[in-house]
Length: 294
Ligand code: NAD
Image (cartoon, rainbow, N blue to C red; front, side, top):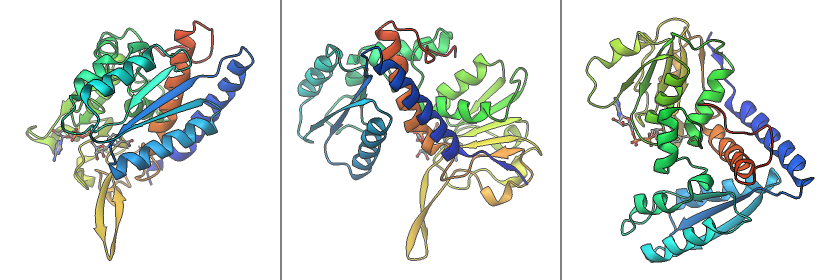
């Protein structure tokens, strides 16, 4: 049987580490603060934002919530971001995506102070990640690496295959694996012979948004499988969440993340960790959460 990588348990450990660090910082009069900006009424975004705010407070960090109506203009949103950039209580700024269609998301993300960019989407942080010079790392890829760290001792020379080339998961996770000196292949919807490429993988990270895409016979015995996919599929009268991997066919993998309970819980935990890192860096205090080398 493949070993299960317990994302829920590992995420709880990260949240505890953040809470401990928050206590330590509080003794120095510092309360790291995360500002979450939600524009409009998208139901999924509302759930994510609620969860982020709840976990921010539970970890002992300050939470600042900003809600704008779906009709808010680009300039109103940019004004809000600029005011958060200069607000000294705010160490991290998260603008919940997707934004309404009339707003240019890139312009908004570019306006966030890179030192407060806890999502790691600002071009400065993207550049830092690809040059291996620190910076804030996007939360889901950071979470994937933390999960991998629990089962991989030495990454050097391992063959890693990433399915998906999005800016939020596929590309950054590929850069992190490359920094660890894996030999990395990034694949996507137009890749030919995907199963054959996946069969070469010691480590597979799948972020395609395609339920059950990866089949058992694509996986080399002993390979480590990180399933980032979150897909809602019909199930009887209702529905259920599945990943991008045909989980029941993965008995011969070395280790695998379940969905749900694998990568999912890591994302918010890493957001909190990034907020503490950003606070320590911006306020120039020494701490356990100095930016990790990529
Ligand atoms: P995206 O749609 O931006 O990118 C998907 C990528 O997968 C693209 O590069 C596309 O070329 C590739 N792809 C799609 N179908 C494919 C196929 N059949 N074969 C090969 N490649 C294929 O998606 P995203 O934002 O990167 O998210 C991917 C998945 O991860 C989604 O299910 C999303 O819900 C999930 N996700 C989970 C978390 C989390 O916290 N666990 C965070 C972000 C995204």
